[in-house]
Amino acid sequence: MKILHSKMTTHELANCTGMARQTINRWIREQNWTTEAIPGVKGGRARLIHIDDAVREFLATTPKLRHLSLSLRAAEPEQEYDRPQDRVWRQISDTLIMMTPDEKQRLQTLLVREGLSGFLSRLHIADDSAS
Image (cartoon, rainbow, N blue to C red):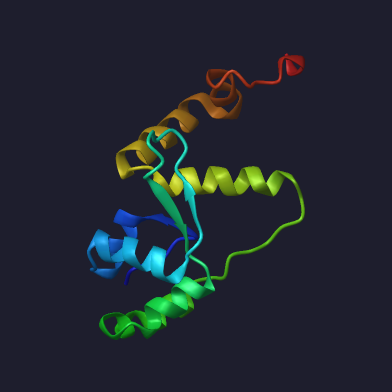
């Protein structure tokens, strides 16, 4: 069963739904879906689609995708948080979602080997006062 994440690239959504990327791009324009630029990708054409209730509802009513309606509606709704640190958590979560399985495995190996302090040190964001 395919899972829709809170944000997906055009390519990811096309693979998930079995539709062409051109069709997804047309739907973005026609349905006025919310998108955002992917950080680090030049040219501004690479976008993340916010998979909100309107997108799920549209996909569920598309004749070719009606069979996906149960899985689309069963997806956990996106949570809204008031605490400022949750914005960072969402960014980290979205980054992890976009990682390849090999990248995730290497990150897991690094975390096991280095621990949190080693990981933060490698990112040059370690708390120097903790030493």
